[in-house]
Length: 178
Image 1 (tube, rainbow, N blue to C red):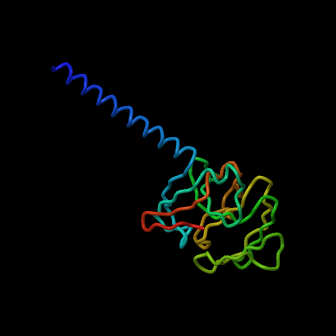
Image 2 (cartoon, helix red, strand yellow):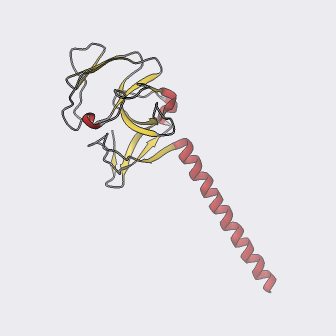
Image 3 (tube, rainbow, N blue to C red):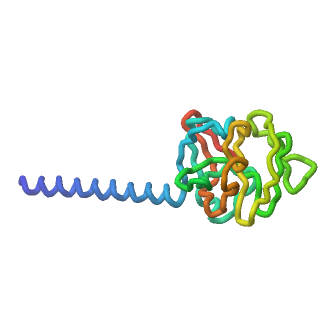
């Protein structure tokens, strides 16, 4: 009778080990191929994403579509690919970007890009930037306090370095981002 109980105990332990191992594999798969789950450490995206907010970006979005202007994206920082950044896509491949009096102008347009999401009135003149094919120009929403494409050594983010589009922020409050 003791042997029977011992076998049942071992069987139960093996069952738990299999369940835990499967759970770890599923979590690894989801984190590696489906989502990016990260904490935003700085205020470069205020007021859209605050320091300490956690975000979820969907990797699948850019498997099937290219990034669009206005997307908030997680990507490998061009000057150190071991670091992930979160910024807004501003310049698309082949475009010319000028920033005059803090306003962004695309392809010498007379009208600046809508920046209603920007925290404070941006200041400064930057550019002209010619976005190479297959690359993107990224800016933070807190333009006066963001280290972004304007200041990087490698000014542009290659499309294959963009990991996902941010859809959800949580921790200090849950919100679905547009």
